[in-house]
Image (cartoon, rainbow, N blue to C red; front, side, top):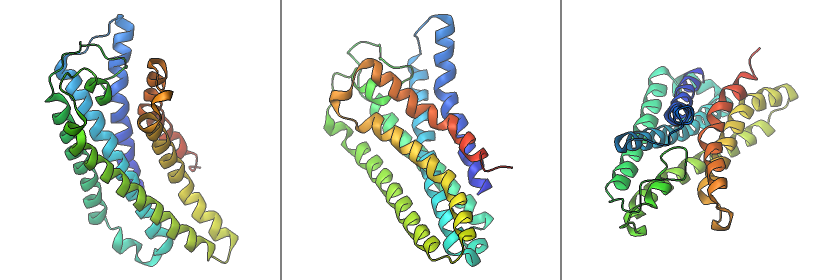
Length: 237
């Protein structure tokens, strides 16, 4: 678990470092400028880190499932090589998913100005500047991302269904307490991560406005990464 927490901490640090420093520098220098290459790099890094973090949270759900439902097999199923392989797969998935979206977004000509109403380069805001943007152009990346997101979400749900079934069969309250104290931080982090991301991208158009879009983007891009260390450190003595 500590190995995956290290990966989560690095991804959280990367997510915040990708967006906030540039936004703070622009605020302090009273400018709103970012280069085209800088914008592309910001899109790639943020999407990569965000996707990899979702995969790591999914792996952490599996780690909790093995620890609670198959404790005698834990060292076999979650050995150092297996953990390293799963972490590498999560980071690699993030890279490939980000490459697909970044290449698709910046292959479109931008002819609707050069100003986006956001504090960082966000794909939906950039697509609004394209004169050739169609939903057909975005279908392939959307299908890939939707499949990845749905698969990870389903895996997390199934893992916790199995965990709760195992916990309810435990005869002692001490076992219940130990199991739930192990899972609650992860559940809190996943809930915060998914709720802010889903609200940012799947909310009705009637709830969209420039000021609300800015607040929501801040919530899903900064708040989970900032609160994750706090949530996990609450278990430490």
